[in-house]
Length: 457
Image (cartoon, rainbow, N blue to C red):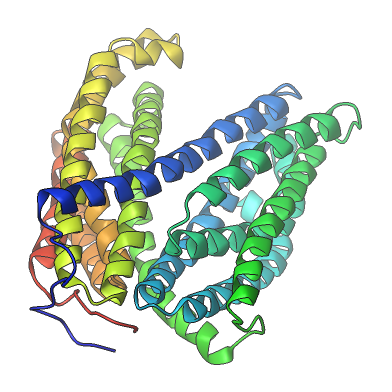
């Protein structure tokens, strides 16, 4: 492994010149656009699942909601399988060792299988206590238990999809995951409709249809990776050292993810605290957060490009290109944030009407959307820098930075909620303190050179 490089430049091109900027723009667009479409496809098709189950009845829909929270938490904590694999594969690719890149990808797949097997067995065994913890009505709990026990069979395929997607992103291919995501989700809708209604399996049919679609999608992605590994004569057998190395690198990214989820939970609690549990405030918060999350997909697509490009250039030892493409992507992040923010602000008077007829919720959510809109440029910058440092394999710094930001944000937002109160002020703190603090720690790291570790790790 090389140390931090200070003077490495590209002998063949000028990455900071006009031609270099155009080349970087083309690469960013080539990677980010399919990534964005794949990211957006998932929540859109999840809405279709909810619509199918919703026609069975309110208890079934509520049960699906509980099951979805559990599954999304389990899978969300394993997103490192995509992020970490992207970084390691891209670095090996940049170093000119495609065989090693695919071998690292295969290690990621085996790690996904191991974690998935444990999560599946534990999830099925703990389904009852997990559902009970929500304190739902017995009818709702029964439907949630039915769905969850079947859906846990799809955890391993889901984790394989994450790992294989990471491999392909590291190989600079974001189109294949897009095609598989669209085809898999269309299959999911068809299977759900058929198994729920004509076959008559009810909510169990929805869970089974989703699992079958996940198996098909995982198989398609794994086949692509396996074929690539065979072309490069990379071993397909589990490599203990490689799997352990991937697991070790994943720990820091898991901590980073936990700090982000903890911050969102604290924010929701602050809304409850500041509004005395007002249903209107909670509904407005959920609506605003849903829209904010949707816009995050657009910004996160650039972060995915950042992961792939940063890892590749560092693997090639081209620090000048890393610096140049990082600056370019920071510009893209800021510009995208301005566009999403302006769009959200312009549409804020009308968007609430698409989701609710409650005038109290509508009046509460508009000023919150304006606050969220004002913070979009910072979000764009944060997401890009997060992707750059993930691509550099700088997970340890991201974990410590996440803990520091959470330690700053949590007491501030809770104090504001307890004293000033009000949904808008909670969102002001979220945008200014949480996202602002993330921007500070990420910019501080980017301006240094300790993350610029070149060559193979």
